[in-house]
Length: 114
Length: 250
Image 1 (cartoon, rainbow over the protein chains, first blue to last red):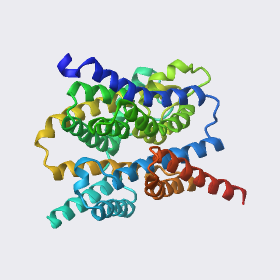
Image 2: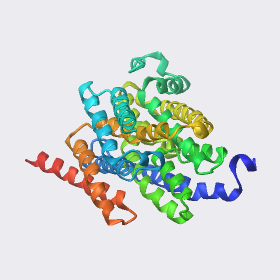
Image 3: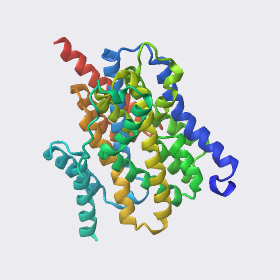
Image 4: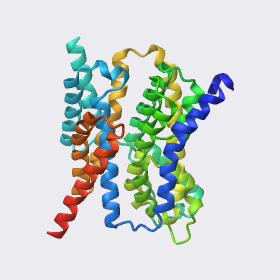
């Protein structure tokens, strides 16, 4: 057990810094979302903010890349995602084709740059 | 390969009469979306990242089941792994998790019936993260309202099992993963999130929020506030809503 999970301290860190920060927002949504109507204007705003925050996470991974992604040059990272989006639009919005297209451009570019 | 066609039974079919069968349909729907594949790849990356950051396998598996949000797990592992304090990591994760609140608020009304008690929704609420949120909007019109909670439980547990397998596999592969493959796995996350969000855009405000959110973050991040994502997200989302409101008026 102790080797599998780590010590109790590691598990406590997971609960305090991982589990609770996420669960608190979910449960707040459960608690306060009750009276909100499906088609209401508030939800249009709320969905726009959720979408924009997710867009921020996407931009963060691209602009300030973690780990191994940092070894890919900036231009190639942006180019690969732009290519993936172009493929997505050209294939009548196929997520699969877009992801494969973007990855292919990244791998080809990296191979070409050496 | 591009899409596994899964046709849910018609709304008036007898197979919706038992909650257990609705649960089973939810479980089977896991195989109907390319997002499952994307989720698999994302968690492959998370397992690998946890291994390289010296976390135990049990710890990262517990994080997949308990945290259940890819971006939050990536932030948690990379901040703790790079020597941040627990408080700093908790703040970063809390900020990234704010987006769960509007997701929950927008999905739950579609699961509620007049008989639904709040406690019936607790487990379904735990499963809400970006993939489940997108899939709920896609699949719920084909699921009778009174079976949507059971259906969500099946979908959530199915996706979670897939991710636990992927986490284990990624953790095990990490030592053997060449850097190029590692970069390719990490690029899957933004690509998949971008395209699935773009596909899910239903009205002008959604499209504007996506575009403005992408454009604004790099600018706001120059301020190094520590809550950059929150600032750019609320600003971009509110501008997008403002345009929507103005056009409705006009």
